[in-house]
Amino acid sequence: MPSKKRYKTDYPGVTYIKGISAKGKPEKIYYIPYYRDGKRVEEKAGRQYRDDMSPARANALRSRRSEGDQLSNHERREEERVEKLKEANKWTINRLWEEYKKLNPIKGITTDQNRYKNYLEEPFGNKEPYELIPLDIDRLRMKLLKTKKSATVKNILELLRRIINFAVKSNLCDQLRFIIKMPTVNNIKTEDLNPSQLEKLLEVLENDSNKFAANLMKLALFTGMRRGELFSLKWDDIDFKRGFINIRDPKGGQDQTIPLNPESEKILKGHERKESSYVFPGQKGEKRVDVRKAVNRIKAEAGLPEDFRPLHGLRHVYASMLASSGKVDMYTLQKLLTHKSPAMTQRYAHLQDDTLKNAANLAGELIVKASKPKVKKRYK
Image (cartoon, rainbow, N blue to C red; front, side, top):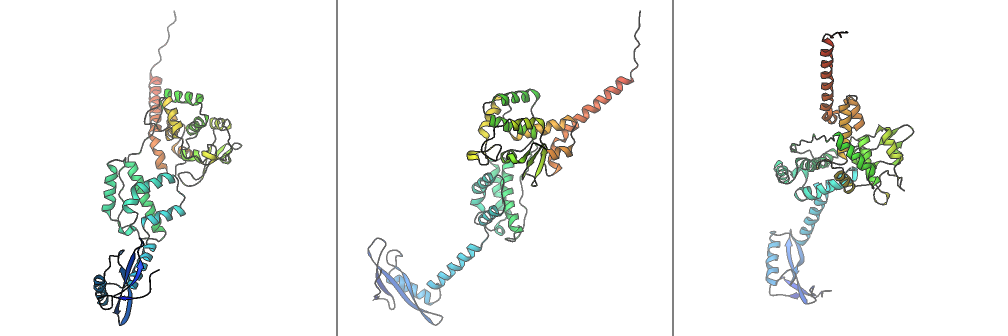
């Protein structure tokens, strides 16, 4: 503890007490008196080594504070307190993100966490929404487009927009004064397999030693369920008696039911039931988060195209085959795929158009054939 005895210096009013430095050496601690608003103030000027304080510097500091050119220690501490309070009450993008996660269950949280941490936190995290300007967004978009696909960049900017929209709806900030411009994305990709590819895939799935992954891929093919829906599927969601699968919290939002067709029923009834409520559980019986290694191996063994997505691609195969059959209308297909909007289902409309064209061509051929005069057979 420093001594309380005050020692005078060569500068009037500047005194010091003896203390000990952080390194254990004797150290002088200087004090200065001055008047502020008619009141006498005496406060610490600084320490000899830590603050590089000397009697001369303490005296200069005394002059500035007595003239009002510098805040007193009390005023400085109060200003810092107010600033900290303001900082704590600032709804920065970082703070809004944390609040958003608490109040909004996020699908694909790991992916969104990585998007935020890798691309949004550094440029925008400490800013409040009103501080953002179009140039900030444009710079980020152009930077990302140099190395990322348009769809990836769109997902990153969409996450930022979601966070800000949440803040606006929660009255935590005002709406942006501009629209976040998204890159143009051509995501109308409808993967399909030709008959020989499909036959080879089913053969590999039937003989693969990893029945768990094989059944997962089969169910994707025979139901058109999304990867996340398959990972979330629980045994309680399967109604064998009525022949339905309950899809809880699908991408469209509201719970849905889809028919349990005979092939899907066969797959599920033959699937090993582990000590878990999930049909395809992950580690320790918890919800699965990944299966890429196994399905990519099966994809390679089946000789599927390099750009074919093992699970989402099978959903497209399911939809494409139904659309091209000519026996399923777009509304029914929308319900089977649990699309929230018919716009998403329209990507398969051209397949139905092809079926209609083939039927129309066939009709023309039949009419022409029927209109030709029949040649009578001659008998000897």
